[in-house]
Length: 241
Image (tube, rainbow, N blue to C red):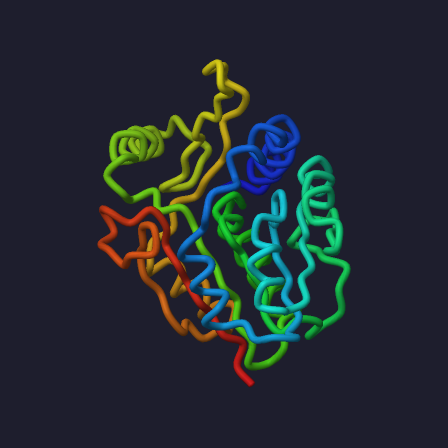
């Protein structure tokens, strides 16, 4: 992807979430089974956790239940305001997750929960993963979930998008989609950018960032499953001691 296209998409992602912030937050209140399981597996009491792309702070409660310290970061001012209102005891920061205001090795673990897939271009995704590595203490984990665009429900949309790429009628990367977001009246509010990661792609990305791929699998509602049936791709990376 050309860098000017990627930069425009970055701006679009930020603007889209400002537009849909309220409605988006209202739809993000149900139980997150797999994320809860992951946090309880890898995070210990009194550890410091950074949530990159935190949205409305949905993960904050899960982290505090473990009695760990939580900080959430997001580029959307409206989502951060909603997060602070929902979780007044927690700390939230407005910033770009490729360039954060924190010092090296500030956190025991870093979360990228349903956020890295919104970053266009391999360059920006690697840059974000390198930033997560910088912030994480040696031995700590970078815990990611990304929406699985290779499941059956996206087969037609992804095929059409990739065909446009083949004939030179798209500036997007392979396996990129613009997915509609509609309000309760079915009015289109935004077309959110997503990148559909494969397991091999995450493996290569981790290698470039010099991170160890500790675990990776597809899941739906906490149950491990195949690529065609998984709702999310879960990837756990470790910064080597």
